[in-house]
Length: 316
Image (cartoon, rainbow, N blue to C red):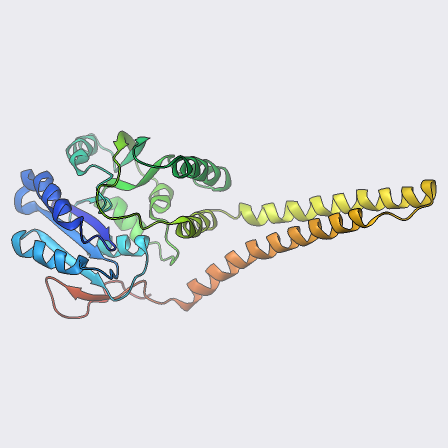
C-alpha cells in the first residue's frame, strides 16, 4: 500500500458523498495502492450509513466506527493506527482543506521530506472572532511551548511511515496530533493554501471545545504554565509587601486607617492569583490522573471489513 487517506468524521452525513467522490478522484492515479479510511467518531446522525453506502461502490474505502464519541484527535489516531500505507494523508471531512493538494505534497515528499503540512494562507468564510482566536492560539502556544509548532497549521498533512510509527509510540491520552508530529522532528516543510469555507454541515468546534483543545495543547508540551503560576505568586507577594508599606505609612503619617477599597483590592488580587494557581495545578494533576488509569484510547464497534470488535490500540 502506497498511500492511506485518513479522515475522522463526526456528524458529517451531508459531507460523506462529496468527500468520497473527491478523494476517489485524487487517489485514482495510485490505483489499488491507495486506500481511504473514514473513522466515525460516534456520530448521532446517518454518517455511518453513508460510509457503508459509499464503501459498497468504492472498493478502496474502509470505514471504522468507534464505540463512543472520543473526540477528533482520538478518532484521527484510530485511523492512523489502522492505516497501512507507506505515506499517510490526513484531512477533515468538511473539505475546507483541499484534497487536490495531495499530488503537490507527494512531489515534495519525493524530494526527501518526511512531513509535508498545509499552512493556511487565508481563511475564507470564517468570522473575525475565529480568525483572531486562531491567530492568538498559535502565537501563544509557541510562546508557552517547549516545541516549535508551525503557525496557522492543522492536521492537514502528508507523513511517511517512519514518522507516523514514531508518533504512534507516544502513549499520551490527551492528544494534540499536530504538536506530536512537530515534537517528533524529522524533515518537515509547509505548503501554503487558501482554506475554503465549509459548504455542508456545521462546525464541530464550538468555543467550549476550542478552549479545551487549547488547554490540552499548552499543557501537553510545556511546564511553562506551572512556572507562570510561581511567578504570579511572587508578584502577588511583592504587591502585598508594597500594600503593607502603604498601610503602615498611612497609619504613621496620616494617623488614619486604610479604607475598605484597599482591603477589597488586596483580597480580590490574592484570591485571583490563588485560584489561577490552583487551576493550573489542577490541569496537570488531571492529566496525570487520566494517564495513570492507562485505559485504551478507543474501541472499534464496527468495521466495514470485519463484523467483530476490534480494539486496535494495544494497551501497554
